[in-house]
Structure formats: structure tokens, C-alpha cells
Image 1 (cartoon, rainbow, N blue to C red):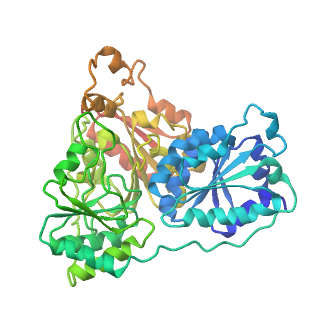
Image 2 (image 1 turned 135 degrees about the vertical axis):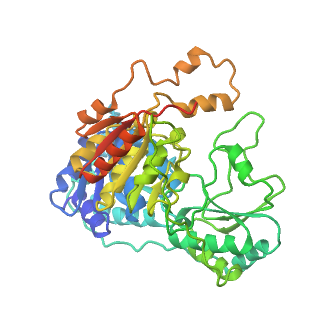
Length: 517
């Protein structure tokens, strides 16, 4: 058994049986070893940002890590943005990076680079295999490290000669650590805050965004009058009829200021205190209201849901959660607008859907339109690095092939990783992409105003415009092997969305939605 074979066998034995890949010469023995361990599914992507984003989407839904296979330092660099998003989502990923043979590195070949410092920016786990005999143990350690609460990117660097060398040994899985319980004294002290009678906000994230956590939050809020909020960009939020509808904290600082107005205490569970996404002249970065106090019920590496359930028993015994009743918008008519396209989605979203949301400015009204739709999972842009939506949808569809996946995708963000469509076609994934085409980086038009930049004239606007030439996303999708259509009215979008959901495999709808700005 060579090093690559021991690596893949160890991964599979630990439950990691999907590898998203964009390999190069230094990874060829890994590629060859896939045929000796047929339980590992290799998925090819045309760009490393799709590889890493798909691994993120897969793990968010599967609840276990996928592996990636990247080519040296430049391959890691190409995949770094979506690894950043995965870091912010606390997603477990086993990030395998091939490197030059150990004896070749001294020659400073053209693709030589320092991999460790780049991988270090992910603040995860890093190891370089030093011998073929160690590869299996290193792989087992990487899987366990990726799954240690709250989840992280574990990077294993595999030199080519260590990969092809004989003497590899498959190693049994290492049981991952489990979250430790929050102390009873902490729960009781937070309960006392809720009993003060002063205005309280309860902000949650991470695992609290699934049904058990949401039910506990609703019980606490109902009994105490606390304002409940979910973090702005949750990794995975369960929503829809039959679940508590908990409002997300706003993206813009002005929204958060309004939501938290008058609050004297902010209780945190599985997330951090809110801060402004960017700095703005003359405006605060810390969004906890002045004079208010932040209290931590549970850190992300703790048992967040258990702490919320214990707090609910302390302050809300016998209280039932408030559940969202089924409700769908009426199907709109007329030309598509930023206001009505979301009603089409809300009216037709199928039961059990997974929604990868990178609609950005076009999706401002999406939460209200889908609140009463059948139960679904929402995957959001956790780290703010655009180009996540299509890759995350790809990975989610591989993790849950029996569920419909809907990618709500802005045009500017889509172009970062548009080649994900090819992987969807190659793997015949049930992903329906609704591409909101306003021919602009609309969010940046808004930010240009919000940062107080002077002189936003024609030259400035030129850098935020995606026309001249207009892009034909129908032809782009069809060129990638994905059936596509164009919608300019609400009726067309509804008809095309229904058809795409009814047919197997991927589809793209180019929805001409005017910008809000």
C-alpha cells in the first residue's frame, strides 16, 4: 500500500467518502489510488473555488466532512475564498494539498511556494506528512481535528514522494471530541439577567439554528419577552411552516441599530457579539447598543443547544414555542421586479428544499416571502466572500440527492464560480439555479454611497457595471451542459421554476430582475 492508498482508505474508514478535486501532477498518485478504494467518490471541479465551496456545502448538509484535493500553493490560493467562508461557517473539511516531492523542493521549481503560511490564515489544523508510514495516522488526525467542536478546516499537506512511496498503513478512526456542557451556574446567571425586567436580546448561531435550538429560543422569548435573533449569516438555518420563525439580524449596521434599539442586555449563544460588516466614517463598529451589556450563555465549542434547552427549562417551564403557520404568497403577475420574484419562490418552494442563498441585494425580501413555505434549509454567505452560492449548492446536492436544491444567485457573484454549473451537469445534480440578473454589482453601488465616497461619477460607476457587453447566461449555462431559459415576467419565472423542479438534473433560469438601486 502506498501513501495515497493509505490516505484514502483511512478517510473512507472515518466516514469521509467524497473528495472534491482539481488535481495536478503532484496529486496523480492520489488520483490513481481512487480505483483501489472504490468507496471514495471523486468529484471533479474546474476551479479550486468550486472544490472548496462544494466541500463546504456538502458538510453543512451531511453533518460530516468531505475531502478536497488541491494542487500545491496556487491551488490553495485559488480555493481560499470559499475556505474562508467555510471557516466562518465552522464547517469540517479535510483539505488535502499535494506538494512537490521532498527532495525536489530545494530546486525552487516554478510552482514552489510556502503552503503553510497561506493555510495558516484559516486558523484551523495543519500538518505536513513526513513519511509514508505516517500518512494514515495523519489522515485520521485530520478527520478528528476537522470535527472537533465547532468544526474547522484541517489541512494535510502531502508531498508527492510521500504519496507514491510504499509502506502506507491505514489507521482506524479517531473519535472526535464532543462539545462540553455549559455550567449550571452560567445558565442560572443568564436566567437572572432575563428576570431583571430590563429589555433583553437573545442572539444565537451555529447549531442553535436547527429545530431543537429554535424551539428553545422561542420558549425563552415567549416566557420572558426577550427579543430573539439569529446571526446575520447562519451556516444552516432550518425555516418554514411548523418551526419557530426567528428574525435574522440585519446586514447593515443601521438595521441592527433599529433591531436592538432600547436593549440593555444581549445574550449570546453560539455566536459573537454583533459588529459592523465594514467600517464607515463616523459610525461605530461595535453594534451592541451603548450602555448595554453582552453576556455569553454558550461558546461555539460548547453544547449550545443543551444550554438553550436548560435555560428554557429554567425560565420557561411548560411554555410551548410559537410555530410559524403555513402561508404562501399569491403568485404575482407582470414584469419581474425586485419585489415580486421572491413571491414566486415563496409560492412554489417545494417541501424539504435546500436553498443556497447568494441573491444579495435582490433577495432582501426573500425571508418574508418564504417564512411560511414548507420546511426547508437555508445556507447563507457566512464569510462574505462572494462566489459561494453555486459551489455550496453543488456540494449540498451531493450530500442530499433526494432533496431539491435551489440556488438563488446574483449575477455578479455567480461569475466568480460559474464553472460549478459544469460539475452540476457532469454529476446530474438536482439543482435549480435562479440567477438574478440586474447587470451590476448592486451591493457595491449601495456601499459607494454608504461609505461617503466623493465624486461617484461615470468612471466610478463603470467599475460597478456588468453590461457592455451584456452576458447571456442562458448560452453560458447551455455551454456548461445545463438546460437554461430566460424569464422576464413573474408568469414566466413561475412556469420555468415549476418545470425545472419537476425534471431531473440541473437547470438555470436567467431572471431579469431590475436593481433596487
